[in-house]
Length: 115
Image: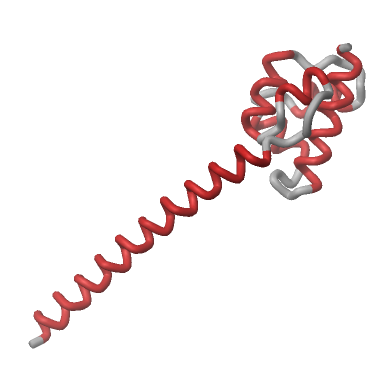
């Protein structure tokens, strides 16, 4: 079972890098707060990944913990990620609109001062 979890962990690391979510393994190690050498030991199958690290990795990169631990379902939590991205986009659009209005107000104030 540990061997299967390790293999899925390695597969998900490769997936995260291939999708350019993170550009290299050192960055993932940093995000997981472990040394690059320890991370390398896990990826080279000389050390087992711990449950705590799996939990953090899944949370950070949108990987399904059910898939990671059991192999069931899909690797990614795309539906959850998609909903979060939609909400973040809406929040950013609202912020942009507020900033646009503030810029317009400031332009009008500057024009008034010029007169």
